[in-house]
Length: 204
Image (cartoon, rainbow, N blue to C red):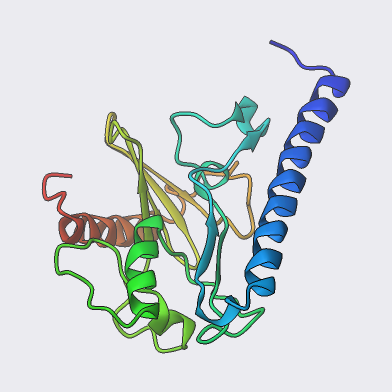
């Protein structure tokens, strides 16, 4: 239904409260690790499983969509003996990269069956083997998303249509550019299809 300004402010306040609480609890954890003298040999990873939409395109919270607001999540890794503090990687990555990254940091081999890629080369500035984009998909495979450093492509497999967004200039993804930039959309879709085959989805 229709939400009043008070409703919207209340929803934002609840979300901000959750973020504040999570931040406080993570701080307690890190403080305790430091007090125990385990900082340099403890890997701490903070992430999330989905984003939230706050009224964009009339949608609230999260649901069966792969727009940037829905799939953009934090990923913070602390391991001071290898990763410098305040180091940032701008390349889009996937949640499936977390486990092989931990293996990277522990200097353990990554099994061939693992779909993700270890992020240590990206962190070190030598991303020779990292794919060019990050894939997200609904559990129904109704939408499949491909985020590159410049573009966000969404393939709707139900109606066989593409949507293309410049998420830097249009972070709320209001303007679908798939018609105006059809060549870019086609090139990215080809990259997505190749990536899906690498991930084991040959019939996508």
